[in-house]
Picture 1: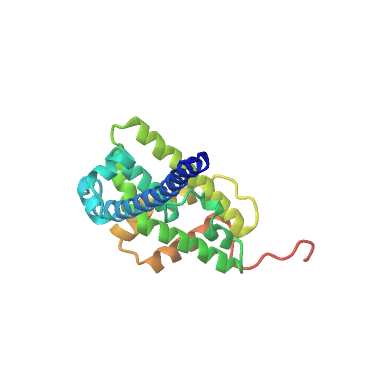
Picture 2: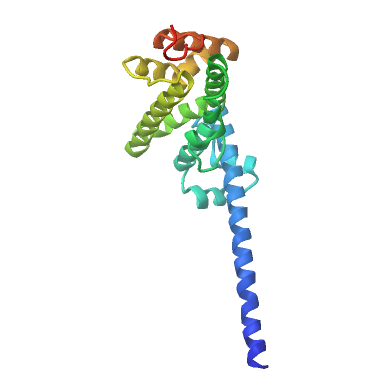
Amino acid sequence: MSPKKSAHATATPSKKRSYDSSRRQRQAEQTRGEVLVAAMELFNARGWAETTLADVAEAAGVAVETIYKGFKSKKQLVRDAMEAAVVGDAEPLAFVERDPFRRLGEGTRAERLQVGMDILADLHERSAGLWRALGDAAAGDDALEAWMRDGEQNRKLDTVRSLERIFERPITGPMIDIVWTLYGPESYWKLVHVAGLSRAEYQAMLTEATLRLLGESLDEPKPRGRR
């Protein structure tokens, strides 16, 4: 065999390995996404104790060993599922980088506030039960409890950013904590699952509460300098 052929022969497997590696990575990402979707749905519907890794594996169409390999434990899975549920998918994009946040700044004030209410209702419909499951998982787990507290602070920050985008002004003062609490998963659970409010009633209540607490209205603000 000539040196030229030898060089060619060694180059071919290298390209094949690169292709196979890329394909395996895409497959792994797809599998991870399918597992997270299954976990989101099951934890949200059944809670922590009634959802097993075998249940998630069956729903995702994978082996239990695949879940252990990708997530290490049931607690890590419910944590990652919550992160995905907050934004609706497994893509590594923060809320402020996503289309719904952009739409909070478009249209009339009434339209922007309606977008905000839709975001809240969608978020809690897919995650309020999961949030309760996460709370059960975190009982006695200092690291998971700390992670949940950090998540709540991030939610508070996103709440302020969203309201500032809707109302086009800085949002400050003690009412922030009230609105943040009202927008939370526990409030949603009590209003919808305990009190029995419909999605429309929940959104209408939050809209009215937001306007009253922040001293706002749905009227468009007058341009500066006009009396």
